Length: 244
Image 1 (cartoon, rainbow, N blue to C red):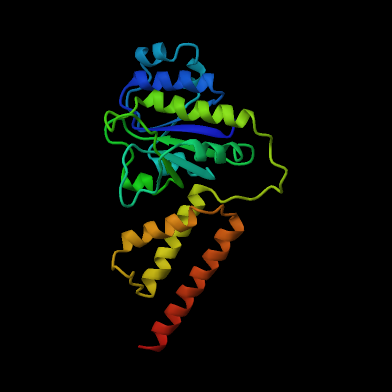
Image 2 (cartoon, rainbow, N blue to C red):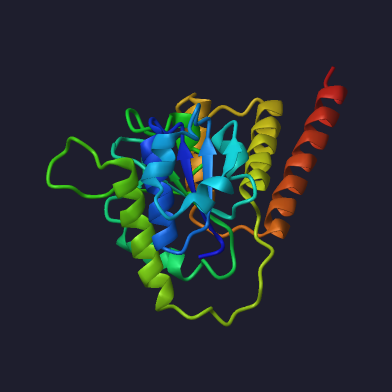
């Protein structure tokens, strides 16, 4: 579990931060990251974090989710909503089973959104997978620390029963490297005046992410795609130069 970090995006109350720290302590996770937490290190947070003050002492503060997950290879977000553009795994079981086989050799972020309105669209796009905890009623959603407990405890149990896989070590691409790849693809497509079938570039960006999020990407894969984008830009500019 040393490769796992829990990320709380704009947590609403210091008490929930403290309760989350206590959850992490009991499930073997030492890394807590807070995105724009406000005035969080209060007496309330310390009281709820009973016995796990070291988690709060060592937590990382980030200005946005992109910074928080930049070095992670796998980013799993949680959401209570479902919608047309949300590829949500309704049950966490398949995600947990997959993560249990990955915790030994990659950096993993488990992301939890705001208590009131969850993760925003630009933050959802940073997640490689989304999961939703099934409940008996549609509303209200789970308390933040309860949701963290469900996911981290399930992962703790699953990873405890999973031996490190005997496979060659891969040089996996980080979240930041993936984001740079997406930016380069958009730049190359814009340069050739690419028009998506529905003339909606943002929707096409989501299609690209959905495709690439289905696979592990090594650094060499990113470099290959960057080379393709570079060649597209080169030939596009050469064409524009000769067609003047």
